[in-house]
Length: 363
Length: 259
Image (spheres, each protein chain N blue to C red):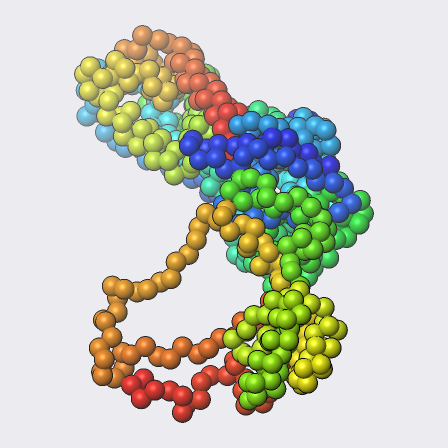
């Protein structure tokens, strides 16, 4: 169990972490979520006693990390996949860590097998890809068979197969009763891996709740309804009927309707009553990613702006060929999660615009 | 608390599994021995051209260590890299997460690397001495002469202490590049130049390398060099003070700063 109380870290004038209190319990995977620069790594470093908190404290199993007896056997951590001397082989790197905790060398070969690095165990880690580095870091964390595991962005740089492996590993470790604390900036990843979420932004606690609760609290359900193509009067009729029945109806870019506040059977009944045929009626959840973005909106440190290339491009001259703005293909808003009906043949919104759509000046 | 022997063993694994250890220590030995041998051969052939004073204070032992001026730089590089690569690679965070007792971590590392540097230093000084004496011909001395053994062992101590001093400096500066950028010019240029400048040499003789190298002289004020206000062991003591200060500084930095 990891327990933080009023954890605060300031670097000069910048406050990286402010008054953070949370508990990470054994037996579940706890996701630690936040945008870049929100203080996740700083918090992880404070848990491991690498950074000293400006105020507050954090303990593992009731002890501050530096006072833990034989720390490597109790706590395993992956902080930075590249934090390895590049000239040392993977096996020797792990061996030096194993010797610290009195772990026999056979265990090194064992964890190398667990993370799938036995083939490259004797190669210098300099040549490792980011994904291989992550695996080596995970191996180091598993070395002492610890009860508490911390992983800072473990899926960075892993291929889909590796991501799935990490996900299953975390769940397995937690199911064995261990405390597993995993940081990530990817909500979608955490939704699949974690049971509990701790969300921070700008170093402050934004949410601390089970994933299920987070989803329920932060995502609103809605229905997607589509009426037959080419019959706008049907669509208008249905919109009127649904609005009258108390639903909120929004129009989606591809002509479908997004209906909130009415259960699906009721929508179907209303459509039937209004004598409108439906081509689609499907349930949707606003994605967790959207909920997370909404939550952290005010807390994003690094926000990108449009690259306008204002000084690189000559201003478009009307009538001149070549420099006109090409027509922007309409990209429909696609729900992040769930399933929706494919468009009828010949109207695939993902297909590139037909040649006949291209204006003359762009050719 | 990780047992001290466990930390020592781990540090030994770390040191022996990087190739920079072999390269730096091998070049410390080879450069010193080769350059000392070359200068001994040169001295022998040009002995008659030396000035009266230089001939009177000719110190065959000290001459056979003259390659150390260059060889010590490899020792500096070894010392800096042992500590500095922990920082440059980020390994320091993995290490300290495994050994939360920072003093145990730092001093185990320095103990292992320092012992290795001392061993290589001693091998270097003995090799340099015997090869140098063989090349000096009739001007040679022998290991049985008064104070000669002290000078030869002292040469090994000097090499080892230079490496340990560099480790302390690297721990203070937390960067290989910065440490090398300061230590190499200091030992190779600044110390040598200042020791030739009239007023500055009063200060320069208290520098770690100037003071420490006294132990390698058998004849006091060998080859017409300046009189020093301390003896061979006093000089080594001054060097030890420098080394202790560097280690203390390195430990304080490691203790206070976030990793």
